[in-house]
Image (cartoon, rainbow, N blue to C red; front, side, top):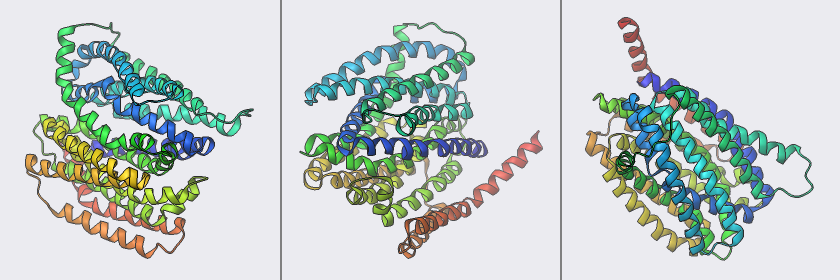
Length: 480
């Protein structure tokens, strides 16, 4: 299982590192430079508002479906047409809730129109994730990897043409950006649907209310967890835009730094996509998940710490390279946000394990605690410190959530500190020392030296796991 995890992870990382950096730093960044911090800040706040509430589009069905199809592949044909029917019903409720809350929050008419478009995009994106949950549940990881980058690839082609090659009589508008997202999401969803139909055969939407209610009851704990995690992970930009007089500009400045965190966080999210069906199957077969957890932790935490160190020492330099304005302000925010990547990355591993184990009651308690902490701290710090206060809140909240998840995992799985824990701590000190001694160099030299040190140390830390994988491979050959 470890060997399968590594091979699929390598393919998934290759595709995402090939496509998504072009999307984030070539397209998304260029859009913000074109439209300005204030207009992009308005879009960013609305996007996160729609993102937080998109739980009502899914109500945890995708995670529930991934876990169940991983353990019982024959359920695909039974669940798929019924879940599609349920999702169409939920979409109507989602649109009503979003627009109603938007009116209550006193969004302008222009903002409400943008919100309606973003809600539709969230519906299509959520549908893609549901379709991918079926594909991943069938262990078709390589195809799932291809679909994971397809929408971004289409955005790079379409938006890149308009930004860099097409002659325009008027400046680029943020609405164009949203329209291109719609095109990319719809195209990707149709491709994934065709693949599902090929594997599961044609289907007819079925309104079996008894089964729909049963699925909804079983998925609601997933939905609550997603909602709570979305709130403490994304509410900062929404509050920034609403609480401050210059909220749109502050949100735009925050978005400049958050873009790097979001880009790095995508890699951590990919771990969770692969780990959930693997953990689910291993727990069903009563296999020891400890070695996979240890290997995944070293794979993700050491690079995350390396990125955090680089962004701490070179935050302003990086922002100056990427953006036309507000480099100093966004640099201060970046230095905090990128250290948030460490607990966020770790939570993708431990939280995924706890989800696969069905420990949703405990996870929801942790998430609710994090929401209360996040909202309280944001309401205190944002009026005083602006975007910097939101960054402080993000770091503290993510750290608390990760620590609580570790404590829970140690209790449920009897995990104890071992040599892997000390390896990660020792490697982190070495990376920090490298960053400190190279901080007088340029961002190119110092940053590459620090990241290179982190990469080498990651490989060295994985040597025990590589040896174990080789043994598993030899045993497989002998058994065949």
